[in-house]
Length: 596
Image (cartoon, rainbow, N blue to C red; front, top):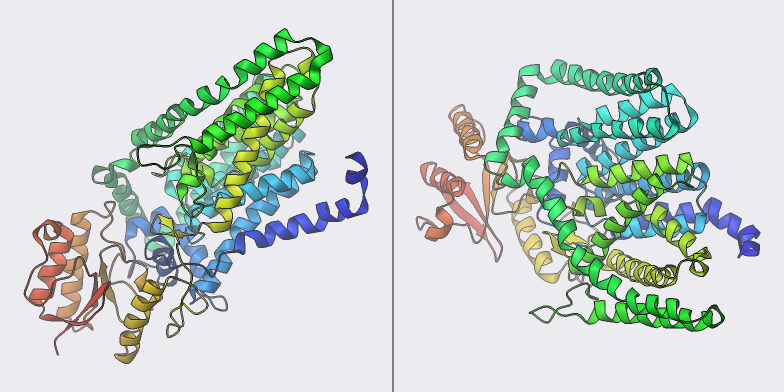
């Protein structure tokens, strides 16, 4: 092993090949799949950024993500899905490469292990890269963590100021990043570890706060000058009011979901550990001279645990723990959750370990905080933490490597069974993660099932592979939009089809995803009144596109369960009041225009 690490080829891999792979690997699926939800919705907000076509709550609560996204749309090919996937995918590349460089050069972790960990971290990034309010959040959060590490480990105040600036700026990437201010706990914990004076702790805290508050005030001042302070405050007030209808965004709901998922998955931890019991008994009973028997037996018990995990079935006959359908979340959700639990456990062990070096305690503590805080501010539970394991995954794999390399089994009988289970779980985790990364592409909160066709007549979707059904939907409606020269016309969308705004190059009249619970009925009423006012002033009437399940045909209203939706009822009434008629429909969409 030492000869391999010292070889010229390995050094070339560490310096050039591994970073290059990590740069390119996140771009492997940029031409796969068509998502009608998040992907096109975010790209539409980027392309048509501003209060004219966006909801003020969304504009201001994710301002920097929208601003950076808008800049990307101005780059060559920025009006197409393929190039936007490329540009936004580079943020994941940045996360992987930056983490790799830090962990290998500053934290001195083995490059091969870090590389494998980064591959696993990228593979678990289920979230579309179009959601820049997530990936830009991770970039700034990672930068803040790295600056904290450098500032505390080297005792350099300027890095602490920069760390505060990164986290303060992050509030304007996504307002719910406010809890990241809790990273200051890392400063205080490290002060206890190093037994720093109260004066020193206050100084370090002050430097962090200076950067945080300074950055926050600078961005607030910029937004106030550009949009007016009252508009910004009103948008953020609506963000807090959103929890009345979208209760899963309440802080209590987020915390409950996060901890309940951890507690629920302790079921698997307990049962996996049961396979260590017979190995422990053998290690205690057999003499040291039969060490090979102990190892073989523990290996068999660990393999039995893996077999049990894969063959355990639920009531529907599917695997309870994980399966081989890598285009679905079920292939990685539970292994990734257990990996998070293992991360938190190992970080605490290293922080409180008497023999752990101070710098590693600092790194372990910062990783512990980042794993916990990443899940707060989102209604996706632990999935957001799955998406941000760029420091955690390599660090945990390194700790498992160190555990397996140690000779503790000669003194501690339990060490050998635990090593065997650690190797087993690592193998399962990496296999499921990399398999998921190879197959999964997000489409309406599930995975893409087919990439056999494309919509050839749509310039925005050029080069994108999708299912034959979706290709037919988009080909048909794109042909009609081109024939009637509707590109550039404002559109009202409803029925979970917000991506059409970007795909058809039609800016939204207000919020392209108005059917979300986070967009209140009162907000939509206000927006609809503004549309009606503009019509009286002679503005070109907007086109209306509904999902076929929501659509009305002529004077026939939709089915009663659908019309009970007050937002849809508003749109249907608008169609009737302003003499709209259905001018196009296919299996998925219905398009309405005002009669001439």
